[in-house]
Image (cartoon, rainbow, N blue to C red):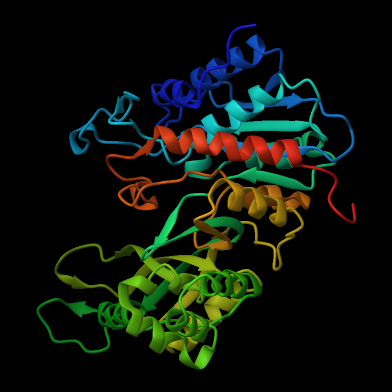
Amino acid sequence: MADTPSPVELLQALIRFDTSNPPGNERACLEHVAGLLSEAGVEHRFVASAPERPNLVARVPGRGDAPPLLLYGHVDVVPADPAEWAHPPFGGEVIDGEVWGRGALDMKGGVAIMLAALLAAARWETPPAGDLVLMLTSDEEAGSLPGMKFLVEEHPELFAGIRFGISEFGGFTQWHGSHRFTPIQVAEKQRCLIRATIRGKGGHAASVVRGTASGKAGRLLQTLATRRLPVHVTPVARQMIEAMAGALPLHERAGLRALLVPALTDRLLDLIGEGGAPLDPLLHNTATPTVLAGGQVTNVIPTEITIDLDGRVLPGSSPRALVAELEALAPGLAEYEIVREEPPAAGQPDLALFPLLEQVSREKDPGATPIPMLLSGYTDARYVSQLGIQTYGYLPMKLPRHITTKLVHAADERVTVDALEFGVDCLGEVLRRYERPTGS
């Protein structure tokens, strides 16, 4: 049996497959991983709705003392313009102790960590308590239709007995002044597409017409840009902010906890400024204008304009509730239609596995505080959760200050060699200690 590649070698190889989505072309990348699994004697197979966009499912048998544990991630990445990068985005070069390339953080780095930990577990003399199930999917960056959505809806038997999953988006170091946090994602917002239709008076562009659709659209856009929707303090946001506050000095602690008082939330966010920006969408539903359309010719005032709004809804809320908030924020300016919505997030996460992840994180990085995290975006967890499986975003990467999640989907994405090795160490320890959860 060949030696197991290091997480750095695994990531370099993954990056060198250009899986930019669109079009994805994930097959060659996944075939490479399948080859590594074959060399290690790990059972695996492809499950696909489209030949060039398969999903890879592997299983390391456990002792049967605990339910199977799911490890999952995607191998597609967003496109990268080489002209914007200091080093080739698909070169996988190691420069000054950092692996450069598209996907280093999102999420081929995480896939490398999971794969290294799984391959190591396959060699253990004593098998893990439960089966380890690895799923590597296609198309997460563009909707997951041939990926996790297909697996959940067409092959739910693959998830039989699973209660917990480990995947993105968490474990990255988050700096707050001199203090380090390790956010562990336990919940995420739900995405929906809302179309605002604005109607008004038309006429010749040379005339002066009041009450036009474009004028109303301008007022709506200005309102959305300058005013927040109502405050919602969800249980998971409260847990997250309380955990952060408990690790900070007294003067910062009081200010952070005051964010949880709805009457004070918005005023405090304004006072905190840029430092409070990451918390803002965790305390509000949001609707961001992304696509505007209207008018046919330049000398006619249009009578109808549409604005597509990217909506993000907190756990426990709904797209319909978001529409009601928009109608109250800017009454009479537009009619709203829910065009599309992703599966809803669970209102209250199952935190039974959190203590283990927290304990391992504290032991491996005593200077950082693990906290439960609500993600303002969304991941494939939205599909996995439909089967009653709780996902934890936990692919630990102990990062220096200059490498942050701002590099995700951006130029010069990279990760340190040390962060990858740290992640394998943490995840491997979790796999060793995993046991039957209380109450199962």
